[in-house]
Image (cartoon, rainbow, N blue to C red; front, side, top):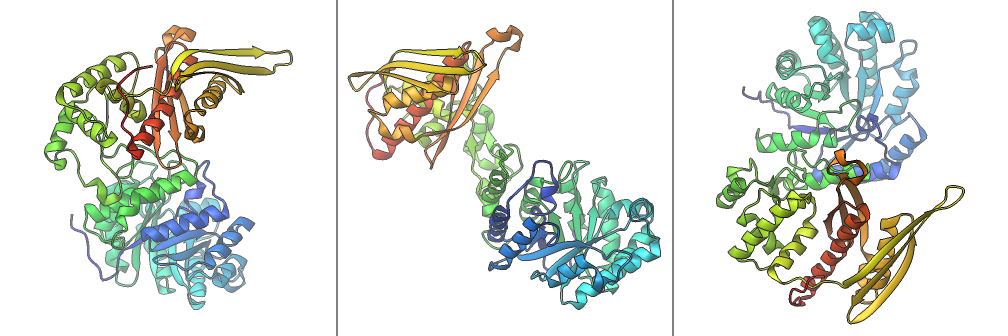
Length: 539
């Protein structure tokens, strides 16, 4: 298929702040919505749909905040509906709010499918055409650029092509600048979308821009959007990371990269695509969501390589196992450490960590990784522990302390109150430290006791923050006697790393991961300061 060309510049329309917020668990404050809009503007998105300016007090605050900003690339669009059937357009309060909004663009949704006319709004087809035309004409008369959002367009198209076209034609004749064809139920397949869009472009493309607004209920949101562009659509609507109601909207993150890198469609200003990963992760973090590691282009695993043969191919020519350069989308190549790794993996990881590794040492490290992963370790998510493993095998690891003992007491008292106390005894810098601390659980108490003691020798370790703690049972058939794997993520405010511990005793596994987490921070500090590590004594 060859993309139909038009004279209209291509547009990206982001609906994260409105449609995206309809997804389960999705919520942002007014200030957070402003931050997202700023990030989208930096990315280079052309249109940002901010929501209903009259729906609730928070949305009123959002529009007030947006109105005070100066936008470099984006135009803010307000969203609303066609007039109610019992009032004229100029007397409809919602349309009047759109007209009075600072937004130069208004997107109004109208009915297109006979099923909705009969079951939802209960108006006859001719009256529906008047609702569309009156609403568009009113807003156009108020000086707005009007995008007509044809709800359930593709369902309507399959039901009655002629009437679906009449709805679009009514909007165009009333002054609509853009016709947004919505796959509201996400029910359509790519070839169905291509056929319908091509027909609309042929019928009305001379008079209005054609846009695609897809949902992902059939898993085709991205594909449907790309096929629509092939058929002549010059605006794509979607949400960052595909968030939205039910299974989500079309993923604008993936679509943008596909358009630029696969289809040659310039959708962002120069340098914008390199901000894609940063923007994607920013939105997820504000929503308190862990960025999906397998997301195309921007996921942590999108350019991760684990198999030895793959890594060997990558070292020869990255094109062997990467379809695009990760730098193009602001991502980075990741060489994953596992039992499948080869020498090249270890050497590359060692160089990044500032560890000198020769061929024999790399082989020993691989053997050690295989041995440990057989017992339940997994270094893919524990880069900090893997760095320490390399240092131990090369004799460049300096332990933080020597452990004499640790003990945890958990006591439940009458009334259900549970108290936890940990005591550690360690040697560091030639001194013996004994510390006791309380916590809301065994790991918290151990962490507090260890930091209290080690802080005497390494004060900066008191500031390391444990950002995540995960426990996985490796062999659940053994019940409470099963081996557990603990993964800890930690941060010093600049860098983030993972550490791992494995043991049949949950507290022992947690202790191992905790110590590795702090030890890795100390090693990184030594490397940054240019302090040569001592010989490889192992605690």
